[in-house]
Image (cartoon, rainbow, N blue to C red):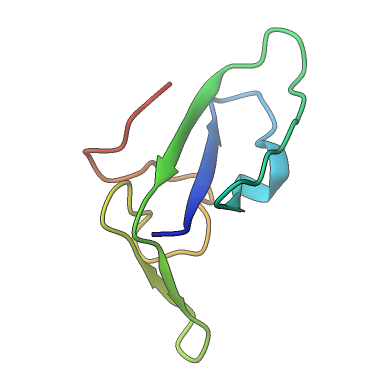
Length: 82
């Protein structure tokens, strides 16, 4: 597949890091920090495809209602919640 989309969804009262998500390509590594006592969800989406012309995405796992990033909604099960 070559890449995954890593998504974030903060619980009420917490900021969502990295604008809700980012992409990692094969072999890439990213380190990010969240505030102490941060609360939320982190999951990976596989089979991600974004159509810039219509502004919609689709994923094989963890889809976010066709959005580029989670933007305050969770991923469709079977999103793996860590």
